[in-house]
Structures are given as structure tokens and as C-alpha cells.
Length: 328
Image (cartoon, rainbow, N blue to C red; front, top):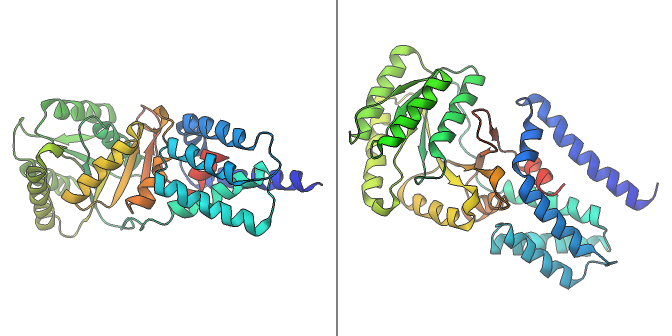
């Protein structure tokens, strides 16, 4: 077997291992992941292949072109430079490399960067409150429904709290999803105190023996001070009424907006403590590389990615499999 064939077989085996890892997860994980990353994968692969066309060796011009390719995929400038530098060093150690081996190196180094973010708090055995934050229009309410569906598939009893009382449409949309999923939604009238909604939701959850309360919150970044006070008040209610429950805050970002989403994330980090990120609308963009920028630049773990419009089109994020689907 020639060296090229051996390396191709090694790369294919790595991809197969990622698919085998799917067996312990939800049905269709690998298929959904590849579908969600199709646009980014296709664009990246075409450009990476073009970088090698007609070249026998990896020269500095090739590396510079690859930096541009990664930046256009919204991996981020600093992250792209670091990623290519890591690969450059590995290539220099081992001498001349072919396309298959180079792509494998990219997968390896990208996975390491994705794993560099601090891990999210582990899910405890007791009940949980999940606060969902994000600006309007990023797909937050739909993501809440998907997260609720995932909790149902895990055997949890779920309750939703419509604490985005700033928009009547947000309450109505959440109620529609609740009806579709068979999940109760605790709400009050438009303009009500969001913390009062959360108070009612926690008491309802306790009386009904719920395992998971998912809270929709407002995303008014243009009034950050008001939002900060609102979120702080909600957390005080949770700490007082559900002190024995685990609480986490997830930030929903619209993957189609690329670097703009990162700017939004930085603003939220000034306002609230964020435990992890959900990348929504990943299937509708070629900017899937932003997941790497979130981990490396923002130092936040990506926990889930949205890969479609259906209730079950939310999958857990796994760095190795993500990198393999993106570049494999």
C-alpha cells in the first residue's frame, strides 16, 4: 500500500470513528451534523482543494491563501492565523504532506482549539433552570422549543416560562411551540414583570414535579442597563425559590451573521454570566467556522447547534466530530 493510500485510509477511518461515536447519541446525529455544515463544508473544501492544485509542496503562499479561506468562513482573524501556524509547524516537523494528510492536520488542530474553551458546568442529577438569552431575531424561541424537545427525549418533564414580556409576539410564539410539544407554558400579560413570571414558573414546576424549567428572556441590547437589572432580578428569584436546583445561562447566536454574532456575544458578556452558547441556523450559512472563534476568542463552550427548522433539529456539540464534518 502506498503512502498516499495509507494516509487516505487513515483519514477515512477517523471519519468512520466519528460516525461510530454517534451510536451512543441521538439517532441521526452524524447525518444532521453533516447536513447542518453542508454549506460551510462545501465552500471550505473547494478552497482547500484549490490551494493544493498544481502544487507538489506546501509553500508559504499556500499557507497565506489558507488563512484567507478560514477568515472568510468566519473562523476569525486571530484564530485563523493561529490555526494555520499550528498546521505549518506540524508540516515542518514531518516534511512534505499531501492534501489528505493536510486536511487531517486541520481537523486535529481545529478540534484542539474547540476544546480549549472552559467546559460548561456538568449537568447534575437534580432539577435544572435554563435561562435563554439572545437578541431578537436570532432564533431564541425556536431554540427553546428544540431544547425542550431534547429534554423530553431524555425523559425529563419540562415547563417553559415566557419571561420575554417585552414582546407579545414572543409570548404567543412560545405558547404555540408549547402546544405543539405538549409542554406547559407559564405566562403573564404583555408588559408584566419577567421575574414574576419566573416566580410563578418555579412554583408551578415544584408542584407538578418538573425536572427542567426553560426561561425565555428579553434581548434588548440597546438598553443594556435595563436588561442587566432584569436578568439580575430573575437570578435572585431563582436563587431564592430554587436554591437546590442547578441554573445555567445559554446565549443563542445566529450563525448566519458571523462576526456580528460575536460582537453581540461580547455585549451580552458585559451584561450577564454566560455558561455556554447555542449556534442557531447553522444549516443556512457558510460561516460555520464561527464556532471555533466562539471557543477561542470568547472562551465560551459551544453546547448545541441548530441544523434545521424541526423540533428535533438541535444537536449536541462535539468538537472532534464538528471538525471532521467541517473539513473531512
